[in-house]
Image (cartoon, rainbow, N blue to C red; front, side):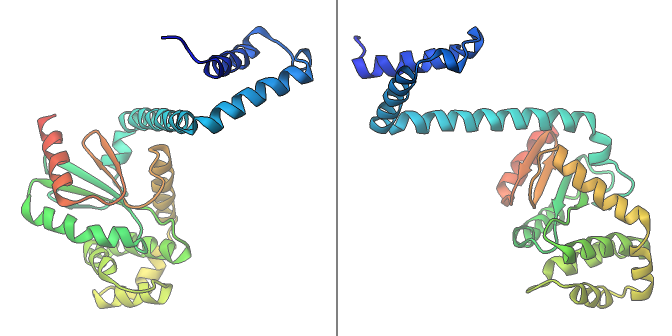
Length: 249
């Protein structure tokens, strides 16, 4: 099939620009009228064929996504101990379960609260699941307070009680609300505040944030199930499918 002249010209122009750096052609070697002609050809072609630009942008986005996924998979492989077995991280469900779900979350995140009933229903149905709670406070100072309070609550044996109550709390989360919730589940508030200031609590939170960044988990919630890193909220059927895949593996 014979190519139309404008299309051929655009292809040649793009090819010329693409190879120019590899041949060390300096910008000064291209005459101004030549540069103007090349830019005009490319501009006119893209204006007449916007789908080409959209396709190129999508291809670039897909490649960036694949590259990020590959990098995250390598991090998951290299840092499995931090992801699944960090002693500073609370564990729920069946500690000896055959599949582990890791969740990165923020108590002020509406999507985390939205998915919480789904997770609880799954844990109620499947008693072979192990659940790892990764505090990831990314929504401001009250989120940090809540994360510190949750990890400090663990020292009083009430991590899951506090976690469940915080996830069920509606409206704006402030420091006062965090302490109100803590009191409602029977935590000693003065002891809690003292424990929250411990350097190991702060280090655990910062380690979670650094780990999430390395795994390319940019927001909450974020899940890891088997070899899969899942950004965003997820429904029950999708969770079950990922768990089934992990069990096959």
